Image 1 (cartoon, helix red, strand yellow):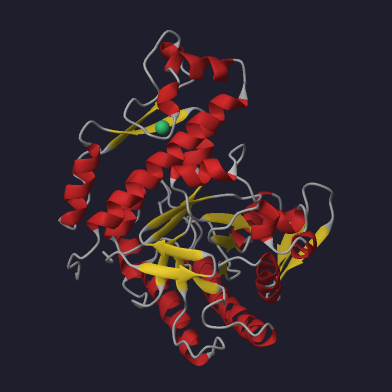
Image 2 (image 1 turned 60 degrees about the horizontal axis):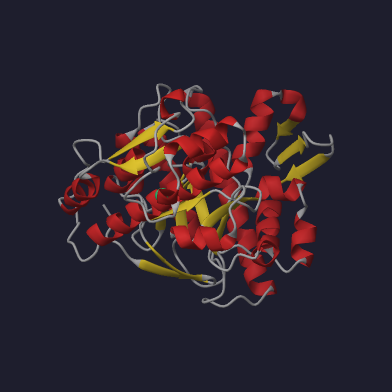
Length: 390
Ligand SMILES: [Zn+2]
């Protein structure tokens, strides 16, 4: 477990561990900036793949960068888009190809062809002006053969080197300073194989020592756990997460990409991860799934983390507001919550879902973001000033 610390980005400070909702297409559907700030959300993740297709990164550059475009003033992380492109190509091979140079894919929107190379992925993210950008990697489903996973790891390593070179080139060209420069995240692949994950992390650490990022740093700013964090049966791969995190230098942030449920985030923190993003609170919220604390949930979580363990029993629960059972339930969404949801009864919000008024989705998505923000605050407090050396 890593102690809580505060890091600076060009758009403000972030205290670890932190969670970022996914503003994939430069928005959290239906939620305005002030609403997001009020939930306690202070960083989000945008997706390069989606933004390069629509509205196009050139337009965002002309708008002054993605912060200006969105009207968002706090930190933003951009994902490289590699995961989306691979999912697309793995689903339908006529939608693109992967070569050593990069990936070539077709827009599902208008059929146009696009190229994404490691260098271009960095160029696009520099254009977006995000605070943390992610290298282009070569993710594969967890179930592929070890030989295929090894090939994925090897290509991920070669592409990470090219991304770091591209970053150094921009650092010089744009006269970035140590203070205003965006941070770069390398991605560790290897699926469920501990040895591959460790080899990948070792090779990435070698690259950080060999290739100057322009600031003399011998480490990556951030190192991410790529691919899925659960196995084919949906079970969290604790041993893989822990062994991989141990390879990440203390100066680098450990980013659990795409993690996840509250339970998985807590598990990942106990394995040494400290930065997370996921669509779950907002996407599931839009479908009516409400996250809330168990009666003594906050204390259960706080006490477990202070002892350096994961909670032995559930600290939160969920329910589906769209269910018929809430048709005449006049209790609030969550009577102890301060996000504003206590103003509405369950029967009213169920009704909104029933008549397909997006207000229902907004109320629950906002509530879930508040739940996640509260959870991260508790985790930050619990991980402060504690000796967590393992
Ligand atoms: Zn609420």
